Structure formats: C-alpha cells, structure tokens
Length: 199
Image (cartoon, rainbow, N blue to C red; front, side):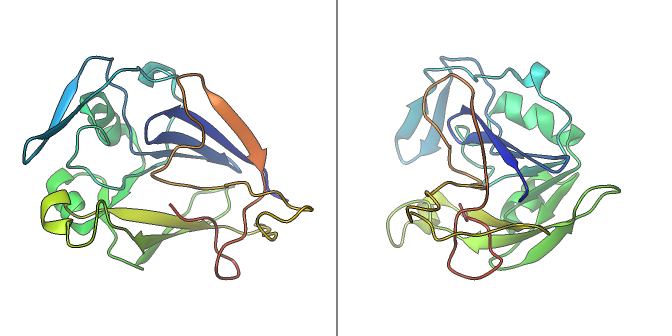
C-alpha cells in the first residue's frame, strides 16, 4: 500500500506527499492581520499565520488551486510560490488570469503528472460550487480534484476494518489549528473504483 503524508499548513493549504511527489493545495502564506475583500460587501481577515512558513517548504511539483480570485485561497505570499512550482492546475478562467505555468482543467477534464522515477498521477477536475445554488455569478468558478496513481488501495470508508481517512483532499484542510499535522494512510473509498478522495 502506498503511504501518503498530509500536512495541514493552514486554512485551505495542505501539503500532499506521495511517492516522491509534493503537491500543494490553495497556497496561503500571508502573515496574520491581512484583510481580503470579495465584493458585494464581503470580506475576511486572517487571524493565524501558516504552520509552515513558505521559506521552509520543499520544492513543489504541482499546485492544486481550487480558485485564484479570492485572497483567502490564494494570497500574496501564495502567489509568489506559483512560478517555482512545476505546474499550477486550476479552473479555465483562473489559468487565463494567471498565465505562466497554469494549466486549465474544465469539469471532469484530466491531466497527468509525470516525472522520472515517480508514479504517474492522473488528476481529474471535479465540479464544485463555492456557495449556495445560483451563486456562481457572485462567487466565481471553482474546482476540486480527484487523484489516481498506481498502487492506490481503497477500503470501505467508515468500516471497522478501514476507518475513514482522506488521502487527497485538495481544497479542504485535514486538520484545524495552526500546528502542522500529518497523517499516513491509504485512500478512503470513493464512489467509483480507482478514484481517490475528492475535494
């Protein structure tokens, strides 16, 4: 069984390490105190800094970016990390805004992460909604990700023999708080054979 290590850095930011790959979700590394506005009078303020500073991150092979247009999902310091990442997988509109190494994935589109001496990871963009029904004109386009690689094993999530554990949950944290938290587990069962957990 392939071991997977998840480190919750803060908010939507998780470092996923599997078989030599390092994937990062929604990079947020600003210091506390920053305020982010989203239009229509809405805003948020950052109260806790990242559990792992951006300078202490290992090299990142890919960023799984659910959306780029809200500062609490991609902040200023997080944007600074994107050029050094191998590839940034995100929405169609986000890839157009970001340019550079951003790769667009529409709903259910797939792409592959390939590198010597590493297993190929297939990434599928999963449809998402960032708010109540009919909110997309306000909230904008977002995406989730499902990851597959050779050697994944899937149990029945929540059974006594296989407790529910998340292998890849791009766009959602694995733990709360500011302390780095990691876990090593096999994939949690998903709705279709061979699929990893979706965001």
